[in-house]
Image (cartoon, rainbow, N blue to C red; front, top):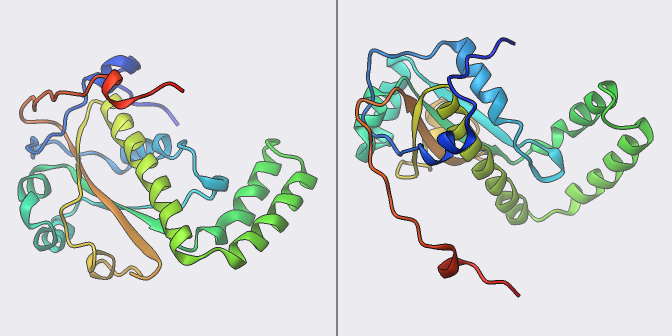
Length: 212
């Protein structure tokens, strides 16, 4: 796929990122470019490569109208952004392992015997995995992919805002997803910033890290 990156400067991507709440509503993101951004985001690591992240791209007027009452304190992001991406984590992501590992063999990333050994071990593992441990694991993976999505968006010249303040209890079923299976991680608004946003202070490393 041809890339539409605006910059490949990692330090500019990382340090230039801001949490943007107000977007230029005239700027839209095509399905093709959004697909590209999501593909780049999903190169993120995940536990046993189960890739439990699932994305709901809400970019239509109808979709935003449904979302608005669920994100009452984030109306500007919902109304002005090109899209709001609802990131979920799949409680049954293990059902994709056979496909993922088979494709790894097909592409030459993994020998067949390793795949068979891994699938057998993981099948046994997930049969006894406590639900809460599974939930905690996939939420970590969902957070990792969300950060990578924000950086990928920035590389494409877009801005984002991670949103935790929304009605997580009903968002899945509001859009027709199984709320028991799909666990909300966060919302990410994405679009072209209408203002520069604000830089923010970071604690120095000597306050947050120790060497032992």
